[in-house]
Length: 215
Ligand code: TZP
Ligand code: MG
Image (tube, rainbow, N blue to C red; front, side, top):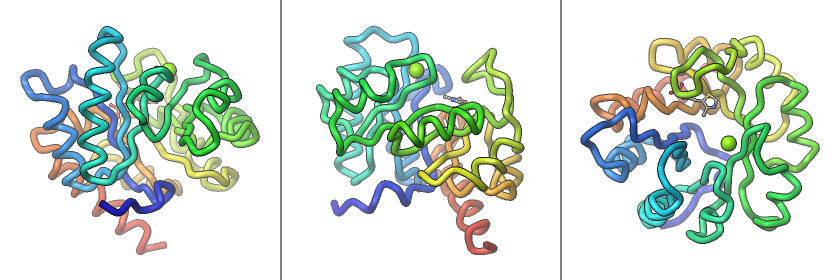
């Protein structure tokens, strides 16, 4: 499968098994990819290392099948072990410079940011992309203050590397995020918790494409 440039991604899907009890992670993520998710992150906050490694291996196989980049949240050793395309870190995780040293120049390294100051620091530090959020309050990341679309507007104006809006984004509010200048959207619960992840991703993609066409 020919891979497109990962920087052109539009819809970022992240795993969260708690949102789809009774359905397999692989099946949900395959549906998301079929619906148009074009980058995937394995994010697992309470599974054991062994379970995360097993999920990462399976997701690596799936994403390779579809030519979709795979990013691993936090676990740099697992990212290396399964040959992931990159890793994603929060503000309090492994420093960017250390991650770069371990993953090498070609890895995709993403950083969560909650302010323009953090965004510009990540950019200067050599991040490949950043997350901008949480735009809205979200149960997926409880306790983190929403940055609102004000930060989305700032990112649109000042951030030069690829950036993706994240946090509490669903089909009911995505147009507001796009109107604030986002061109890439990340959703967790809205995708993996939906009855049809494929349909939900198709709808997200349609909104993103419509906003891009409107300029
Ligand atoms: N980082 C900022 S908000 C967030 C992460 C991982 C959670 C997004 O999840 P949801 O369910 O799309 O609000
Ligand atoms: Mg983290």
